[in-house]
Length: 179
Image (cartoon, rainbow, N blue to C red; front, side):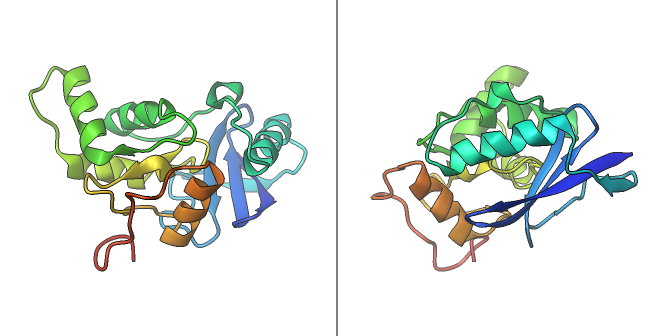
């Protein structure tokens, strides 16, 4: 059985999910794939220690601080490939962005392959079940386009702005997955 709680953030209501020990989900209200990894029954529990810790982490984050991802016990549910992509996301420094192509290159290297599909990486990034903490919002298109955030493009822009990302070379595409 999973446990969930709510957190009121500056970008809207957030649902946190736990297996009792670890954070297994963080979704913005209305986010694509909201709760898709919660295969078991769930109950609300606002007093779970891991939720208290996660809410403190989020308080720090939304106050403009850069809390360490390693400070939270995370256990995202997904395939081995997705797990590997999410580990790479955890390495993206606060206030910086990387491209889907850069992640694909790292995945190819880690897997001993000559190439890796940026689209496959994009699918894994898009299905990240622990948004914000595992910073999928820090991934952009190779041309600087702000694409692919399941939490919505306006929220991606707010999160990057909060982190002080230089938005000069980033742009909103006229068509594509960001709209």
